[in-house]
Image (tube, rainbow, N blue to C red; front, side, top):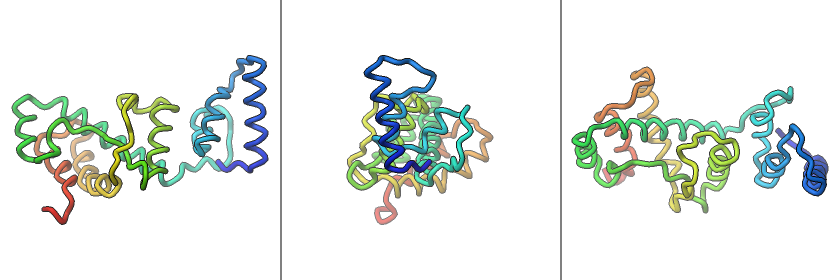
Amino acid sequence: MQLSDGEKLILMMLCDLYDKNEIEGEIDHIFVRDAIFENQTWALPWKFSGIPFKNTETPHIVKKVLDILDMWRVIEYSYSELTEEEKKQLEVNVEFFGKNPIFKGFDGNNETEYLAAADFVINKLDRFEEFKLRDLNSHMPSLATYERMMRVFNPLFHENFGEPLTLEQLTLVLREKIHPSRR
């Protein structure tokens, strides 16, 4: 959703009126304010799905973030389903990255749009709640790694029909965290 500067100003003034007069309406004005301030206006149709908005295309970056969050949800769940012996084997199979693999976010310096979208999806839209309260700034570039992982993950996940990944499958996906120049 694209809002003009004037529309943003009007909405912000309305949000201020809601606050000043302690109005509690059906529209969550705090969410509206956050979406404008954080440049995440694509989320307004998601939050207020009963309003027939026009042009509600989800931005490419948000789609990619959702795919990455979905992948990490499956990775973390699959890891939790492994036996203790399998977890130890994963540590051996994927040195450095096989011990308690968790989603660490995006780089706050170089992947700010991805970080902001992930934060908004998780903490404002209340999706992927298992990632709530995490520091989503990985402090290192992560996007290229996630893209390598996705290329391996997607066919394996579809092959499993939604079942958790096996030890062997987790090994294949997590090995993609190793930069190709180091393999």
